Image (tube, rainbow, N blue to C red; front, side, top):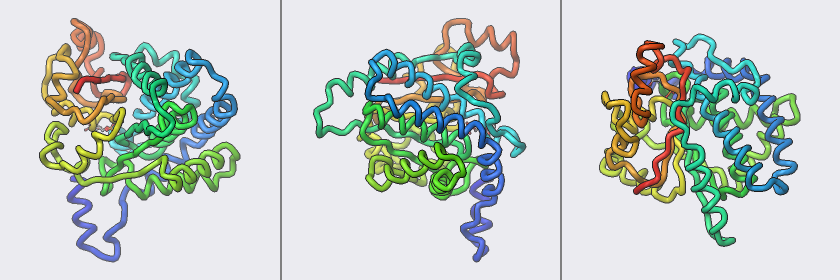
Length: 322
Ligand SMILES: O=P(O)(O)OC[C@H]1O[C@](O)(CO)[C@@H](O)[C@@H]1O
């Protein structure tokens, strides 16, 4: 459907590069303003003392911002049929209450990977994280905040973002959305928002934040076929130390969108897709889920029949092995 919409526009210059979802994406960004201010303020305060944090404190902040990015995935205009689905309250204050809804929590393993790389890194070495983006609006801000934290804490030295070439699933991030968001922050009437915008613009100029897009992300292929059908993208991702896949649609493509048993290991469902260590930050909006404990899925089926489609539950699911 999204391809059809795009095709129809392509055939009708001068509106051939018009994004029909632009207005609602903008609206969702502005509606999330207070939550964005809270997050930007938190980040800027954190940056002031980041050099003084010990390992435990750094880990705590990493877990916080990883969860903020996870729950940012609730803000998706495709699940809400384009009704308002913005973030109204400070997401940092909700984390304790939401913890219980994380069905798979591999945050410790992700932390071990990153902190060990940091400890072993020589001064000239690059540590790279790739974030395969999902929704523009509040979710994109949470991803940028996480990226900034990873860079300012020196856990990593480069962040590569991957977005969509065409408007996709209503609110998915395109290059235009990415640049627009950073410009909006820069010119915002709030010093912390504009500080974030200016810093991120600078990071892009210096090449420590890099934006990519590739047609593969809007093709119907499951990710295990990437090495064959998009060899250049697969090779690019192999340069990463960790790939973070945001959102439900990416999870469906990681796992081939099959009716797996809930207890099938994530590694098995990836079906040999291993360009680099990877993780999924996803709130559940469709009926595929792997890597659960024995009985966990069945219990949810009984107690909450729609647990897989409302975005109430989330996973931070990691696969290390190559
Ligand atoms: O933005 P996300 O997290 O990828 O969610 C997209 C999901 O939402 C839906 O469009 C509706 O639930 C699913 O078909 C799709 O998997």
